Image 1: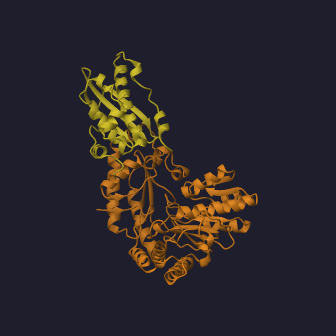
Image 2: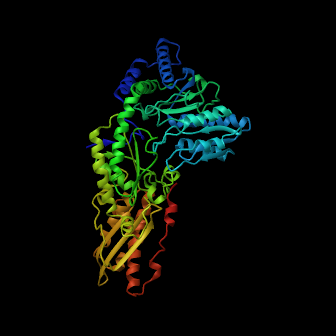
Image 3: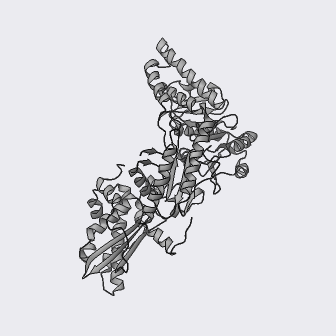
Length: 395
Length: 145
């Protein structure tokens, strides 16, 4: 059996998106910047896509910039707000310890340029506290950046509330909604954000395309210089087939969002309940305030990479926050932020369900994951020490 | 997955000599759970020959494969030969390891040496200390960020 349970990494393209891609490449092959008919037809198609994406997010088409994806969108939003802030002498940025590296590494770079970056902690539930944000957001801030939903543990952050605080204090607010769009309702007005980043391949669109919402009046500077595309804010001939495919995927993803969320969260809860029966394991992140497709566990006494390799042998595609899977010395910063110590953070497993996940696949995962965990534990000296009382159980 | 050679995957899928030797003549454990890998080697020694060897490993695919290969390389061999086993020999026998996984082969070499040292010490046998490099996590620092 083949089970794709790594939808947070990337999703399979929806047939409607693939069809839109091919059709657009064939039909609207002109350059939208060209004056001739072929170019103008492409321009009209681009406009139609922008209008549709804007309608889904609840903003005006002028507030949507098409980009190469989530990382570019995050980078552009953060660097723009920082640059505008620096001009006014405001160099404080508030964010969280569990952001994606597209945000954290950009902030690190700004820190090196003299910005004061404050990363808010999260509780053991993987959720940032609004009170902590409230305390740190002040008139010296040029930006606050809080993700809408976490990519590793799926926790949904109080973005609406933090956005309201920012709005009240006149501080620009960015949210990385890469994992959220297409998986929960996203309305930029309701979220009180000035910037919002999204990526097409997380909801059945193609890779290499995304968008950035920039509220009218919020500062925005180019990362890429050149032509006057995207109102002069993002140079480069528009990737129209990918933009049209993203638009088609988004349309389908949000067409029946409540039903999708209900169906997938039921599968998620079933899988969580089944995996919880494994002794000495723990669910990572809040059980309720989480993405409908996210299942993340730590298993004591084993290491995540060997777990992934064995699951792959059984046809299961999964992910882990262990150091060995990333080639770095430390396990995932998100798992460490929720208080998992290194020893157990190495034994993490992320299964992310999606549109195509079936009841049968959940049964297969529920049978195979415990077998692999047990197999690895049986060859683990750490597990032996735990069983023999020579080492204390953490979970 | 093509991160590893077929040899590594073979030893990972079907590890040789997994388990424990009760009342082993020498036991060596290296690494720590914080770093994400621990290897434990058990030796049965008869007339200075490694009559049997078993391992337990907590770690990634290459750590398990390195333990398996290292035990195969020393099984039935005289102790003095086992002492000359290098991490490079383990990695080569596995048709290579990715650069950032070389520390797994280092752990295998260190675990075997630690087990032999344990055997010498338990039996009051004099040994040349210079043959045993200090077991530490220093090699972890060579891993790329």
